[in-house]
Length: 490
Image (cartoon, rainbow, N blue to C red; front, side):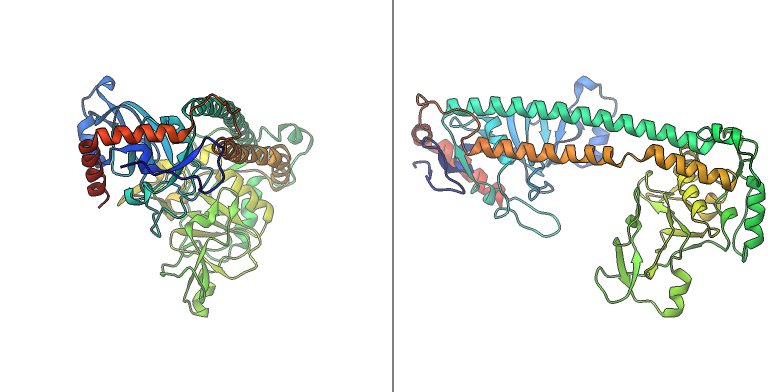
């Protein structure tokens, strides 16, 4: 049966190019996939040497290792489910070579003699999957739909030139991304060092030499105690500071509860809805590295008298008490000016700080330091796979406190020194531009504009005709391959 190809397709092609369904230009090896769960793979890895292990691939790349292989050669893997099909700048397809294993979340393809594996891979990272994927929460590209995806077939020699040029340009982009990553790492390292200097007093050492405090940190703590409304449910601890650095003379180690004017409390546990009506209740992901995000919320039915008990007020300090990620457990965010009515969930603890914006900003700064993070992770406990930290744990975590006047100087100096928003924006913009640039290169490539045409190149339809003749010669083999593809798609 002749191979189907077309002149018309999603866009106009150069003279010697044609469109063909993906299923006509690739062999599909999905029937050889064998998924193995993580527990079984873990058992199979025990006692094995590195040279006995092989890559284990999934929808978007390698997901682990295993002590065996199913494939040995050069293939193109395309996500079946779990791939970012509708995000044009993200990869859905990748090359796999040598000996490896594949689970059932990726299609396994090899280009037939009319095209190159890398030409195929690059195109599958450019193709529009909108009409070919289905599902709601998890998009899926079935084999039956995959084989219908139109692919431009260029003359074979031109494919080689295109692939070489794409790889050359992508290497330059990757080099730029590596440089951006190094710059980001350097920036993060510098900021951590700056934060350490701020919370140990080194940042304000010179200022301190010329400005004697009128009130020490202990005086400030006594003033807060005098304003405290109650301490019925709060337990106060003397934190263990033996492994913490020495602070300047007028500073003191303290705890978050010591800086509150009333008792802390856990939030409310009520199932909510993503849409009104109801009262806005924060989700745990509202506590971001950039501050409080009130739009990360749900809506819950709550009586007015209960709202007051769980409402977030100005100067509250919010700490996440439970999460599966070590990076997130114990995250603290200061809420200086909350104008809308928001309540907080039971995964968050609210600490009503003494009414000073400068204190709140300092607590958030000190809470994010390496000294605090080590204490948090040292006290957090795992329960049912979830990492948790309690009010009593938090009450034993020491944070540094300078005199109020030096606190103001430290925060302002830290802010001035670390205000590299332009650098952050530049780095983020660089990554976005890299993704756009790749798509622009692929667009030019598959519209026939990336490399010069060569009149000596054999038209693509002649390659397809030759492949059709081979298919007729190998009819029984092709019939078996088609039957396997149909069965695998069911």
